[in-house]
Image (cartoon, rainbow over all chains, first blue to last red; front, side, top):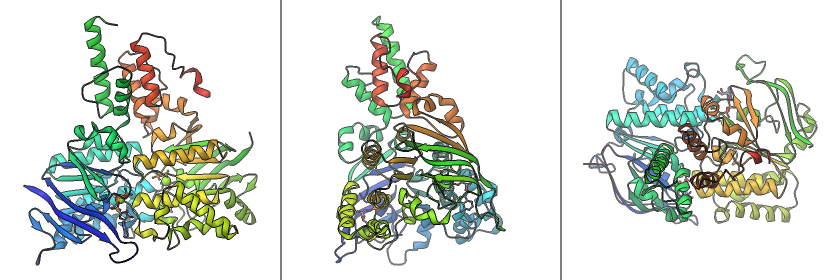
Length: 291
Length: 295
Ligand SMILES: Nc1ncnc2c1ncn2[C@@H]1O[C@H](COP(=O)(O)OP(=O)(O)OP(=O)(O)O)[C@@H](O)[C@H]1O
Ligand SMILES: Nc1ncnc2c1ncn2[C@@H]1O[C@H](COP(=O)(O)OP(=O)(O)OP(=O)(O)O)[C@@H](O)[C@H]1O
Ligand SMILES: [Mg+2]
Ligand SMILES: [Mg+2]
């Protein structure tokens, strides 16, 4: 069954004002349980607007949003519960942090869900490990942290609720490379262990290529593609025309092709794949006796 | 070359001398930035990059040591205006930067404070918004913008000031790939055509590869300082301090470990393609990357 279903969804900001803007324009989308979906699209293409509909932070101007088959805005529906099931990490962590200590901030979700004090403590401890924060940060104000540390607190606050659908809006912006890899690996593990559905909004084609099983490409409020990453990144020229790109190593293979070297039939998406493809190519060449 | 920014043995504590004084954040940082240089600052989260950068325009004052900007000591209060006029800063979070209620007023804000005449303000604001492709949003309120649009407007505000040095704190963190390329082009243009001194904090290794010089911070100290080609050539060291190298540098490193003799200091896809093709064609490496390392 599809866990997320969006039917002819439109969202218009500032209707009737000079700033009227249709940010999401008639989107239909169905996401299967257990998918790891990457969301890419140019600046202002409607990514943040779209995903804020999935946990009811924004209300559709038109259309419906169904979570587990239920219209979240139907009469008698419990929007609070939707917010526990569908966890959303904001693009700017500052929008999400507000408590006086890091601990209280991370505990906020679990507390609202009505967990008992020791369950809250466990949930917070797990989440803190998840994002690699240090114990010494717990009693600090979240506003006295570095940019990347704030981001980690914001992610921990949502993870602590163990949502069935986890949505992250640019979670790795501002993280150092090690933190980025560590947190993406943790998200992957969470995804695999819980069978939850993940949506990852990102401008890093490298991260998207490495982790996702499906790729949603937004363009001017509409869906340009919803397909497997391999297929999407094979359309390099179209992506670049949309203001997007392919991973750096993928680009290398098209440069090599232009110079007459067809190293692999499908261009690699990660450094590991690229390295293997080149080694395999060299082996084949040796085998053929051409040098 | 003439020095623009000089920090001498700078140490820093938040809330220095107060009850809630923090641990020492910067441990005796000495750094000298010549006029016209484009320097990238890397380092793990919490390593002190933003804290150090805010010393360059006297938002923070050193708890110990000194900071000179164009020969002006940042501890001298009456020099503040002159310092801020020279050093513009794009903050890590645009929300801390966008103060006015309309985009174009925001971009004009610093210019008004500097006493620039109104026609000149108009011209510079229009030009800056055009450079970041936000002219269509001139009359919008900042809160009506997407994440990347806010970041562009914050950049426009500093471009309009045209200071002799701009400190960019992760300017491309929220931009799409094309936006990142455009901002990097703008920065390179400022650096090469206008002679603007650039300090750019980033977590993107391929962006740092474009700088004249890379400084790596680690726990409040400067760990490495050199041209990108040298700094990134030590893949293992970079990874050990929580950083990375451009994908092509990593790829070249992995292949070298398998016995393929590729250069250690490949920085761009074009260089990698050149090096691999040269190897495949059995020619000696003519990319010449090793020799041009200091160029
Ligand atoms: N509160 C608002 N009022 C009016 N317009 C808005 C508002 N929020 C966003 N918009 C507009 O809606 C469009 C889509 O914005 P959205 O934030 O969804 O983009 P995005 O794809 O997330 O972009 P980014 O990659 O920059 O974060 C943009 O053109 C933006 O200017
Ligand atoms: N207002 C504050 N009060 C107390 N400590 C702070 C404050 N702001 C930052 N710190 C601490 O100072 C250290 C350096 O922070 P800084 O923001 O300079 O790091 P950074 O290198 O810019 O990190 P990032 O990559 O995450 O932006 C961190 O350990 C942080 O927790
Ligand atoms: Mg967004
Ligand atoms: Mg910082």
